[in-house]
Length: 198
Image (cartoon, rainbow, N blue to C red; front, side, top):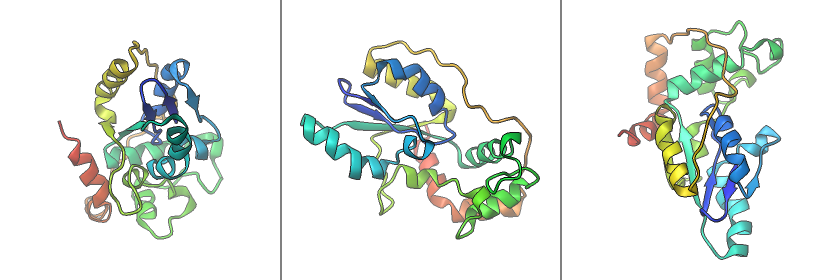
C-alpha cells in the first residue's frame, strides 16, 4: 500500500496484479508505505476504510481516494497456481507443485480452502462487508497502461516500470466443467471484471 498525500490518493496492492512493479516505480513519490510483511502490504479496501483511513483522514481533514488493479479471474488464479509451484516452497502446505490447475481451482472454491488454494478473492479485496465495491478507481491488469496514465496525471510524474515478481510460466488449462463451476460460484469476481470493460 502506498499513500500520496498531496495527490489525495492511496494505491491498494491486490496480490498478483503487477503492484510490486508499480510500488517500485512509485515509492520515491509516496508519503507513506506499507511494504512488508506481505499480509500487511496487501491492505484490503475494507481494512483501509475501517482502520487506516480514519487516522490519515481525520488528522488531515481530507478524504483520500483509493485505486487498485484487478486481473481477469481465471488468469489471476493461473498466476497464483504458477507462483505457488516455485521450487523455493516445494513440500510446504502452500505449494502447488504436483497439483493440477483444476484441483487448485476446486480447492479455491471449497469452504474452507486447503492451504495451497487460500489466496483470497479480488472481489472481496475491493469491497465492503456487504459486497459493495468501495475502491474509487479500478483498473484492469491487462490495460495497466491506463492505470499508469492515471497515476502519472495524478502525481505529475513520469513512471518507468520494470517487470517484478513474475510467476514462472507454464501452460495450464481448465476443464470446461470446472470453468463452468468457477464462473458460477465466483460470479462476483467475473461481474467485477466485466464492469471494467472499456
